[in-house]
Length: 83
Image 1 (tube, rainbow, N blue to C red):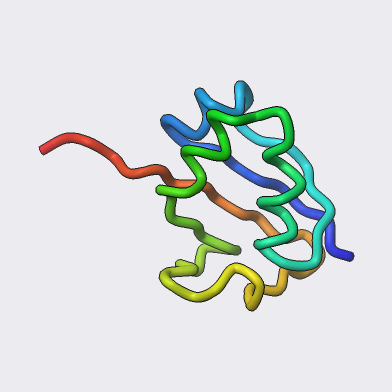
Image 2 (tube, one colour; image 1 turned 180 degrees about the vertical axis):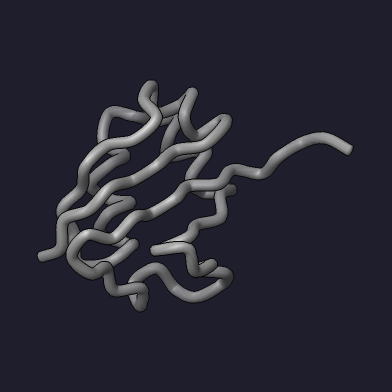
């Protein structure tokens, strides 16, 4: 089981109520399951978000296939508005 840091940006930060937090999980899917209980707004934002794991975009890959390594940084990037 890896430990690391989740960083929230923009609407994800607002929904989480914090900028970052530590995690313990084996995959990105497990991490999402662990950080959403009791945080319905965060769960809603995560469904629309993109993710970077150690700077690499997850893209459309299944979250169950994204293995987290010790010391990983997961960045949660909600859709950004603007122009």
